[in-house]
Image (cartoon, rainbow, N blue to C red):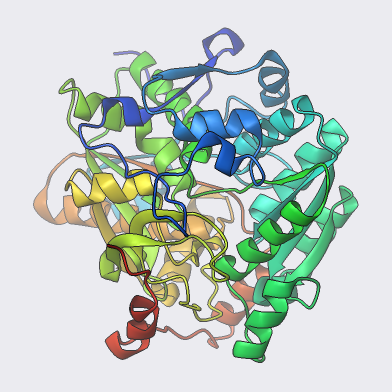
Length: 455
């Protein structure tokens, strides 16, 4: 075995030139998107008013194993990819664990996260279609920032609806978007019919990704030459994000490293799905075995406490129905610092894998997450995003468990980005003002009661 460096980088000629579609290897395919009126599978023509044409093709395709990455996107990727696979030697020493810990670091670009991997792809296809611009939602702001960058690069207009509590807590993230030329609106807003309706029903609400999605979709369908794009949940996004897992798989294979446990934070599923897909493909084909762990906030526990059912992807109920683990489209999460992990549902791909017991899920409370983030920052020298820190927390738990059992397992987790725009949250933690919130069963029930009735 070759000597393993602190950071593993691929050579330019080793970078993936195709995205991987894990649905091809899934025995049980994710359930199709349904028309919310007819409850029949959505067709290409029905999706065209909302999404870009090529992205619809990718969304509906569960038979093509690999999609070629267009050359212009590959050239853009070279600005910040390949991203490093890092051996967490310092963290291992601090924990005094026999486990080997690796993390794939996606924060080495101005957007500060993995979101740019799909943002440039979606903006590219919008440009190729001859569109004027795109609309989107953003929670913590990583996706909105990434899309703003991509649109600026390609000369597209970008309209972002940002969840209101994040808009207020993260003004610098908002200003990065505006610097790249995007318009940023706190959601829910008075700018759309659905926003006004939500505000009337929930006065003073801090907003949710479901609310922001509704506003972005309405805006896209009312403006000529615009389409809606999104940063997570849908299959097309997970396909683009497999660049993460493909690079990781190549780097590990290069040094004969076999991860036993692969961990990722889970909100809508983009980074987790992107990281695990190539490894999950091996598991599905019977070529290798891995333990996969999805980590979500206890304040928004879609996998661990949600129901596997068809649900609206947005609070305004204007989007297609997706079968997923969900808390109900009407669920408004607390204004916690879980940031981008506050979506009411989970990717249909990941939901199916979880339901098939090919993946585990755990929920963690935010004070324990920030404690882990602080320890990681002090040992590894990177200030992690709150979302990423959910994975850090569980990776540390697994490493400590190895210490207790004496097992020498290899742990891989996704470090989705940096936390430099999250200092409001870090300040709350450092000042001892952060609290944990776990919704009661009674508080979850209204969301479940609002699930669509299926025949």
